[in-house]
Image (tube, rainbow, N blue to C red; front, side):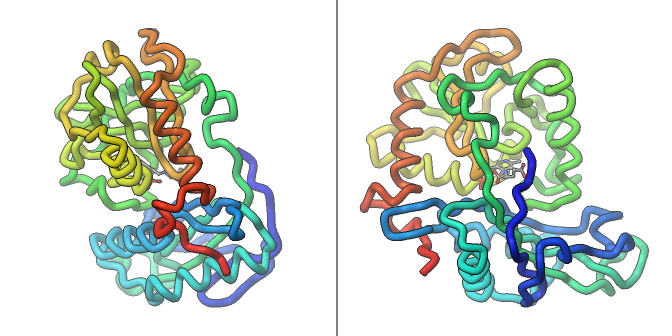
Amino acid sequence: MPIAPVDKVWMNGELVAWENATVHVLTHALHYGSGVFEGIRCYETPRGPAVFRLREHLQRMERSAKIFMMEIPYSVDELMDATFELIKVNRLRSCYVRPIAYRGYGEMGLNPELNPVDVCIAVWGWGAYLGDDALKHGVRMTVSSWRRHDPNIIPPQAKVTGAYINSSMAKLEAVRSGFDEAIMLNPHGYVSEATGENLFVVKDGELLTPPLAAGPLPGVTRASVMAIAADLGMPVFERLMTRADLYVAEEIFCTGTAAEVTPVREIDSRVIGEPGPITLTLQQKYFDIVKGQDEKYEDWLDYVS
Ligand code: PPE
């Protein structure tokens, strides 16, 4: 999706002009994928712009960095303030927020230790990730021929830039074959997640999602939807599933900051159908919450001012 430029980008504590937010070609992360990042959304609410679960996202970035033995030279609170400042100076009412911490310019070679850790935050307006029609009528997915990486190859709970070549290959394969999105199985053949979203399945009236041990990213939206569903009296069961479990599901939807709650209407030419009642209920509730229309979940909103 095209990026709509704004005025400023936050780079290592400074606000720099959008067009000057560049890096050297010998940046370590460009060669070796040595970065950790987040994807966060800020929504317009009756009390002004609010970032959805900003602290949880930045805490996940810290954990990703810890796995990778990378020390981020800013605290979560400092990065929260930087995010608020950035949204304010760019005068955005809603936007996508992309913090990234990466091994910068210094040395070449696989040991990242001697390279500085650079930290940037960018914001821009981003519409429906899988398209407006996707939110209403659902997407068509395919099970990828590429597997999600094994936890002893790249830990799936770390949101590491280099790991995304796996998602990119699956996405490319799916799109070239005429699908909207790909589902990835883990090395044991169990469903893990989509290329940039977690998955939820309704089967025999029960709401299911793959357990974290099956290799999905511990999604902030996943955790939010699990909490919302439980509050609605619909506990979510974490269960191992095979591709055939998906083919015979009553409803399927995917969750993610970018994709929000997107229904899935078809998998590998097996029709799931138009969005079902559980999907629609959770989708509506999610949008109400992120847009500040549901007081019960106020503490999930970090207000910009
Ligand atoms: N799995 C993967 C692999 C993933 O990248 C994301 C987020 C999720 C699940 C959902 O996580 P959460 O956002 O915390 O609910 N993907 C981000 C990046 C998308 C991109 O194209 O870049 C996102 O949704 O912002």
